Length: 431
Length: 164
Image 1 (cartoon, each protein chain N blue to C red):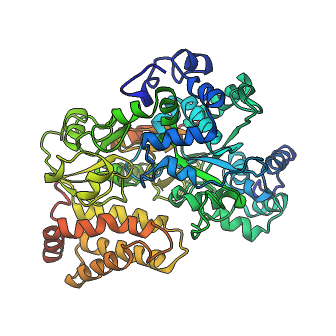
Image 2 (image 1 turned 120 degrees about the vertical axis):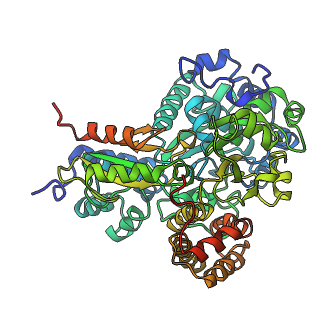
Image 3 (image 1 turned 60 degrees about the vertical axis):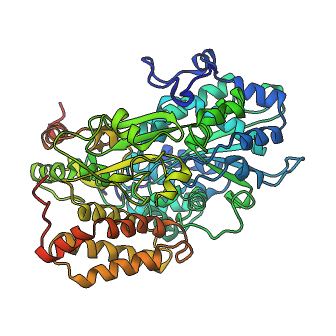
């Protein structure tokens, strides 16, 4: 592949649409799968990805090579194993995987072949959210063509390694993005998360060893294998390697997503790439990486957008796509919108999440609509304290829901007090 | 006998059976099978749910547990067109409430309802991944962005226009 400073999106946005197998090859595609299957052992691929320090791009940031290393080695390859692409992009404010899926589906397919080879899985599944109709059409077309040309199927390149991919279009539920809930959904059951252990790498889909990787994570693999781990490390500006699809939504001049070096400062993303805040508005606060990340204050935008720096600032990098709150949008209204989402999308399996999140939503609704009482703030703090920490609920859904609330209670204290005192939202008619 | 009570047509039964056979276990096909039924009839009736369940070796209650779990499986009749208007945070910031209010007024329905002529159902949906063009909505399979109350209203009007 041509050495590029934006490898993930180099072939995206071309006038003819996504490349077919031949065009993809002419632009440097398929080199990595040739190299991996012909010249590298599966373990060598895992070692290379570990050395590249690639971390999961779905939000948790777990080391990809390390994640793969937990899959049991099976020289006889007699067991079924699964490699699953998590394309259930449903985190509010996030639109990066759709760009990769629609723009260059073959890049994902090549990444999946490489990952499948590394963990010696013969079966690949793309778990796609049901609303992504264009992505579904393009993925199915790309898979059919790749199968016809011989990039998928038995004995790829005469290596003895065979790999198949099929797409599962989801019925639509946010919790399916959680990897164990995703596996449960694929098995045709209500998509509730499972307890760990067993971890998916040991007992995943149908009890078989399974790895679930995010779309953007998998799309990095061809470039790492082609250009090497050192090159990938050198792309990052700070401690994290590679590039990242960053994005901004809200009242900026040019909302969008851009592939930039990992560790690009938040200010540069907002001001240079998104064109800054629109005239007549001022930045108040932001969620740096989706609805389940804690608010950062407008004064914190000089941090680099890498995993460690955002965590140190009190939030999470998450998906890397920021949602901006401006000074003419009500922060309580925004929190109410966020908690409505989380309450609706709770799977209902465990009581603190199923009953706690709707309670939070109703409290915020009351405050926003002028019927809130001062004690309601205590109840909101109670929820943030009780179901915010990991381990109080079955999965990470409720902690994710409490991240914007807990940070918002601190950051927007005056707004809460004003709403309760005035018995109205002071910004309701301002926007 | 209404279509809701008619048996599944043989070709659809065959396609569901094929789909189920291709899976590791029959029940793995449940969401895809429900989606196929819905693509054919617009929604999943009790009769079709029970027939699909029997093809998958499941009880109707078991399959209904799955059907009602997912946002995109409709267990009640919908209009010829379905508008899924995003109600998540970026679209909310960018004015989706005003778009929704105008659509409700124009269509004369609230979210969750279908127009009396059977043309349009209006539903809220979680983030559509089109936040750089908020507010956004999905009309059947087509994504529309950068909506204003006016453009959304015009789109809704085209859905209600009599088919030639």
